[in-house]
Image 1 (cartoon, rainbow, N blue to C red):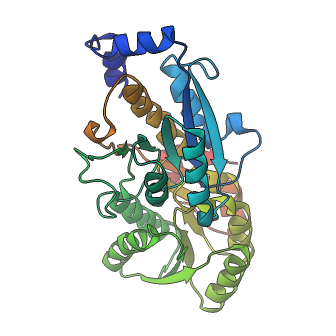
Image 2: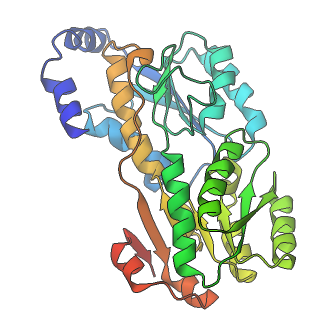
Length: 330
């Protein structure tokens, strides 16, 4: 990644460089619409969403001089996405970055058919029909995609290693999120190999999340997997508290849940995804067509463990997991 950035910025970029120079001379300030699935964090500068700003700074861009961001926070409410798309069209943004999942693509495309779209995070964009292929996405969309099957298999494996006699696992899923059935199928395939029964637990708001935990506790599940979802991310504090209260070991896809009190996370770093998405913005600013930029998938995943939550649950984390963890929250 760093080598590609170096080449793009300093080596072999003679054709693209004049474009940037002319834009700077003309005082071009790129207006970027950035859609986040969760709520506006306070402070924004230290949140996962600030990864995009970090990436832009590393590439030499200065906010306010070279670009401005129109932030939009969905707070887990997918019905707001068409409204955001229409606002971006009225504002005539030059480029759209999505940190709300690939399902934000259809409304964005409909309202902004000619505007480049960078997926800061997505799940199976080929399978969902958002792009033609990872190598040549085509159209006006490119960006990053999660390596879902590998992540789900490892999450199941981590629960097996941590919870003795693991047999029944609830999977918290949001029916409003079109990516969730894909995630559940990946988890199901991993669970079948481990001879574990998965129980889908559906919720579309905070009250339903509370009801779900009441239900799965009565059904004597041994642990819970929480799917990647904007609503769940916005309600991560509530989910972590309910899992602890009901003495359910929990695993998530993002470290922010563990910071909120969840037991473990294994998966992608949203901050790192957004930092890397800046390289796509950089290439597009320099004249590249989004459809010609291959979609990238991560090669490193993060394991984060909350030692305090483990102690509160009475769960013994195998020593080797602490050794291999990227971070242990005390």
